[in-house]
Length: 113
Length: 117
Image 1 (cartoon, each protein chain N blue to C red):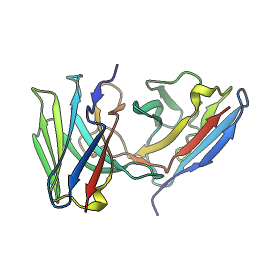
Image 2 (cartoon, helix red, strand yellow):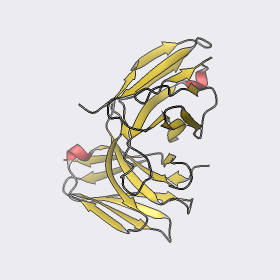
Image 3 (cartoon, rainbow over the protein chains, first blue to last red):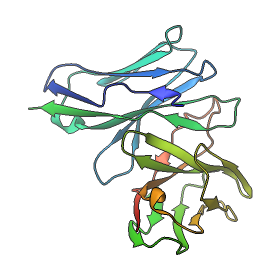
Image 4 (cartoon, rainbow over the protein chains, first blue to last red):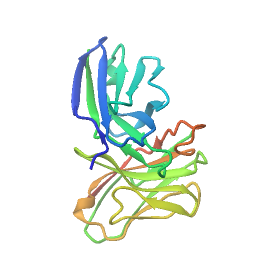
């Protein structure tokens, strides 16, 4: 059973607008969350993370929001740029259960110039 | 340059012919892991290793073996490959996953696309 879910397989956004990518999880033991970005023919690269003690973490154009009660996190990209077009994976881990990372199925973002 | 190196990048093989996908990292990372990426299923963890001689099963370990004899290397072994192991495989490493002192960031290799006929 998928413990981390990304229900939108794809998203298209105009350049300069906000991109919002969503992720839901089912395991309340998860306490660390990450977003990865993947270009074709490359491995995923780390983008931004958030610990469960926070509800927001910002890094330049990227902000991750965590809503623990809803078991939901989102990645906001503002402003979106064509170079942001990629597949985005969210991932979660529970540090007291063996250091496994659980990934979502990914959302393919297309930023239209 | 800090990197995770996988070989081969592409491989077509036949059912039952043993193969090994190598993974090497030059960052002195303790944690290493293997994932497979399949359409609609995302990245699923096959095996991971917390340190030398310490390995654990992930979510989809059936049909795979791993070993961690040295810190830098974490090969993935398919003793008798089958068509359902056709997939894109990623090796990843992290300084140490999950500690408050570490972001838990995983560094990924470029992937190995395996086709089993």
